[in-house]
Image 1 (cartoon, rainbow, N blue to C red):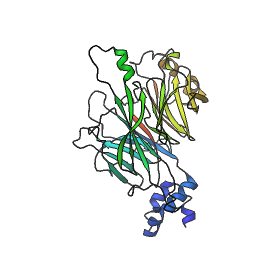
Image 2: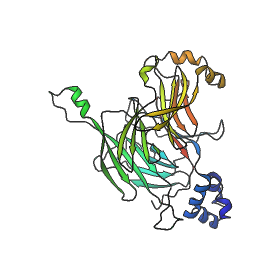
Image 3: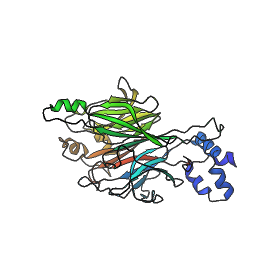
Image 4: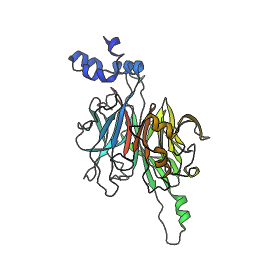
Length: 368
């Protein structure tokens, strides 16, 4: 029975845990989780979607899960109802999700949880800053591994959080603006589930880079943030080194204002761009040389013919966006395993919501 059930994906296994105490114990055990992961891996089940106010400091409490299993599937808004309070989603990695208390809140905390088994751990904010800011970004890194010290059948429950903090120098009245800009930097605060403590990395990233979509995407031990400077900020967790990777095509080369996002597919960083030239997808081949390879392209007319129920006169509408003040007709929000989540201008939602891919997993957190 162990060999048969371990070949099934996570979703039916969650229901089978209710068959008997024996099945629940087996499916929840480390040897079973390890075997099931090796045989089936993880697959995308949907995108976590949460809007945010642009004109006030309060958070929107509603969190939606948009499934990708079948067109027209129900959007769920109760995925995180097992947590002790309403939360804002910050990051997602291999079925685990990092979130924080909704603001306003007297004692905000962080949660790392697994919605599949409804388990979570609570983490305090770094001592350097007790109060969170809505613009702060936290990346979650979690790798499936085995703990040799406990035997080859044990799962190593280790994860890290990386919080990006903009540091601004104290400005004197006689200092020049360009000097202040050059001294601004981003520091990396790291939390480890092993030590259960925060610390500040010696690594910094010079310059002021506003983080926009797809914050903290974890791929092969590296976290990635898309910035508004036509660059991707990458942070190697093992070496604790930061690197700015230029995107394949900078925005100034277009006559209109393009929209983009980053994501993971087959263990590689991908860059998705929507412009007057159409929909283009690249994957990163070399970090240090910022070398990308174009993997997919589709012009706007072809896209409209393929999806007439969503787009009408698409090319002309895209060409009308000549400034960032105007809303994009097509806005790529998230990309994972070949699936792209797009928002069109007709969608009744606020600009640039938080969007994270999510998959089902059996990883336990009660002992993390």
